Image: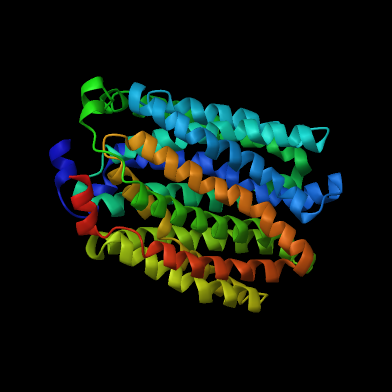
Length: 397
């Protein structure tokens, strides 16, 4: 298997069965996050909420998922990733109960419990995926793995349209099915592979290089800004277009367009990064994000499908590239690296959604989204501090 993984080319990646299985699990766990924004219009009416308050649902789910990831990453480094399928079962069962909450505080608690399963899956999945990726294809292959999550988030609004349109808030009950169907396959398919996932021992811990905090901080900070931008755009598309009188089918498809374009852009960015380096591609991605967001907020209606696709394509590169960079900066601690960059990075997205919502309460959703262009522009300065490929090699050898 190792010799097969070492072959260059897209064919090797596409026939990498463990990688594709982990991608399927990533798609499944992240579809729950994609459903949450479709709950917003229903929750606003049902509980009488404003935009800042309803954004707390994303904060509860993503916040718990994010804060728990470094802990689960630490556990993955030491004990392996055999129980990764249980993350899907937990998330599926907890999320199914959200629509039955009699009060908003209890709904937030249930969302937080569902997020705990997501917090388990992400470092376990990234550590496992990193173990089946050849070094020369690492950016491309990790982008494919991460794209599974993006596709899952993109699928979420479509599931939300169907379920909530037919059953209202209690349609969350049917969200138990994806996780319960995929989890047994994940546990069966990876039963041999996860047993071979490298674990840390006292000797390997002693041999680890010291942590390079400056490049690691730049990596995590860039990831934080990226998630804030993408999560906020995705979260408020349904509410924004609902207030303008558009149907759920329209704004659900629009939210999905952002994420599908992001998935396509992530794979392309991974291939470019393997050739030109992660730092250059990340900076270029952020630079293109600024005008894309401004165009998206300026022109509404059917043309928004074009500008939404531009937002997704331009912002796609940062996530998977920062994940691979963190794993290299924390060589021998890939689980911890995955937990840090995903957990601390994504918590900014969770916090950013209600902050963006509060700004929207003051100046409107279009104005709030335009402030995200300023955030992307400022992040370019931070991305300039990221190590280049040669510098990264010198830091980690």
